[in-house]
Length: 431
Image (tube, rainbow, N blue to C red; front, top):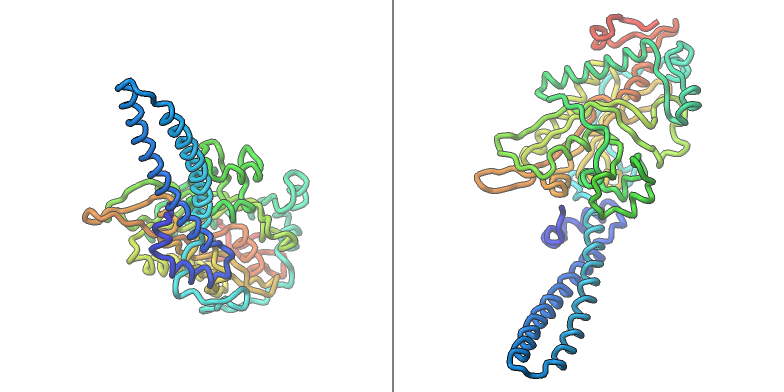
């Protein structure tokens, strides 16, 4: 995991990053606590050394048949001091550990300073914006009998859905199109477990800041939060994205430099509470609790990190262009970059029904933040270094379905299938 030595060695960079994030993370408290812990540890070691010497003296007195009662009383008092110091040291250790696990990543120097939305910067746009037919995706799909939100709300609650008929085929076509595209680029398909142990989940994402989005399995969120520092194997979370499982897959592993890069295309359902989105996107299936997604994940050497960031971003752009979806790229500012990421560029598709661009994917680099927490390294001529981890959405299916429907719906009540998906659908139109 991230250590206090790392903090001391990189304190200027950490302070600057926390300030740019406008984060309330208590870095000065951590430094003070670390200093107290090291001082207390030194004092404890001195007390323990004194105890050992006094124990030897008592043994010598007893061997000589002399009265050792006074020394024994003094030793008892010394042991009491040691017990108190050990308890205090443990309490400080637990607090330090909690702070270290919740430390945000160091922002890349290229991330613009500012707060959203004004601080985010549009890099470029592609495609011709379409007018659409003036209807929302929910209205279009419900009228065609392809989407049922009312019955899903009855049986599962808000933000769930039933997809039907050709919309199911379109969903599956999107998944297969993405996997085939990435396979040609050298990305290996991986279907991960849909649950992840907490001790590995906190390696990829800070539980304290991310838990509101997660579904805890077998216990309440409150119970899980109280046990944050415990390594209990039966504490599990449903995965919010396959990236989390794929990065954790290589926890505590050592690669040869020749093994890198590793390129994965993780395909899985994703489960999110969307607890921070009350009252936002309540209609339709743009923001839901369960959805399928293909995620690009790369492990690489630190010097190659920028190269693979551009690669996974280019992959997504090529897929959007193949699907004919107008989009723009947006660099997130310091106040909008996720806690565990050093840099993020969002790809936003145009939605005619909303007359606006909305997020369809995020290209991010965690640099060595996740690998430090999960102990993922590679060996290069005897030197062990942490790998860099990067991720980018391939296709987030429900959002892409919404975008395709709003861009390709026709006034005659049909939906044109994007050309890239026709071989998978077996038809050019959805009636």
